Length: 116
Length: 109
Image (cartoon, rainbow over all chains, first blue to last red; front, side):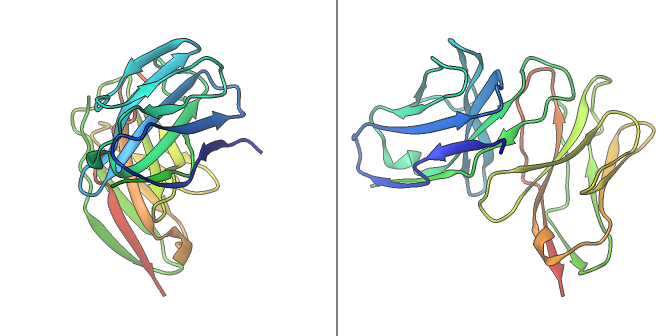
């Protein structure tokens, strides 16, 4: 089944303790992206990757890192989490990025992160 | 980026058609209109997209006005499981999806 998976689905951690949220897709998609969703602010893009070893900042990249060493995986790294990073995080992928109107993004199930 | 305007909420009776409007008056000629929905706190789910012509798939129909300044998503026979937040997105020429507040559709028995 074609899908985007995220792990963990739920995470409670403390300020300053490094964590990684994994994202994997099995559709051979070139483009992957991370979003966070907060009440009243909607979905905002954190980072995206057009292909292996190509990443770029989205609208809210501060406090986050990403890497794209393999096509299928796009982990989100919080090196020193803070309470303002408590949020619902979504990973998404599409066949390719960069334009064209018919490239649909597929979203993962979400990771609910709480930083105490 | 073209911005979209959607009503914050709508109700629909189960079994009836749900018509969700979206205004995108500043849309550019090469920008597509996409619709996604988000059920509770699940990941957004793709519904349909279009450029100029009306489109239909197994989930919904998309009606785009001739001047492309507005569109309507139609769920022909709404069910309780269609209760969700529906996002109308006009996609710029990168791959970023700029989600607004959407319309919270409540399907009532």
